[in-house]
Image 1 (cartoon, one colour):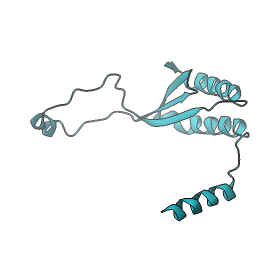
Image 2: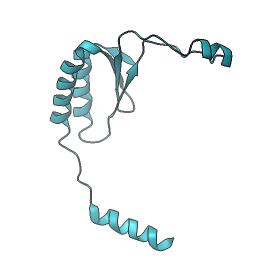
Image 3: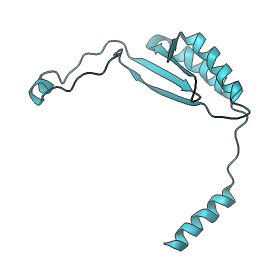
Image 4: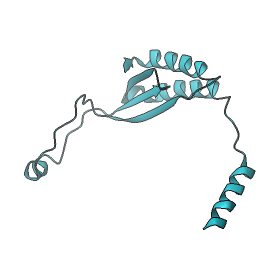
Length: 118
């Protein structure tokens, strides 16, 4: 997985979305990031009660994008979230124009068939 700076991530995400226009999908995930790179071992119940309150520093967000072959990620600090969200939204709006509209008639007929078989 490639950890990029915020602007580099947006640039590579644009490239990834443009490559997937003809065929393929891009999966994007966002989650809270606490700065931990390795998993913590499970603690015993006694030790867990003592350390149940963890002090967190500054909250961060981890953005990941993949097309199945290439993986991208970036970490966004709290103070940069608004600027990054605006740029991220613009990238998504510009590159998500090839979405297919759902066919409601097909979905209704499948639902009716499922009800009939029950």
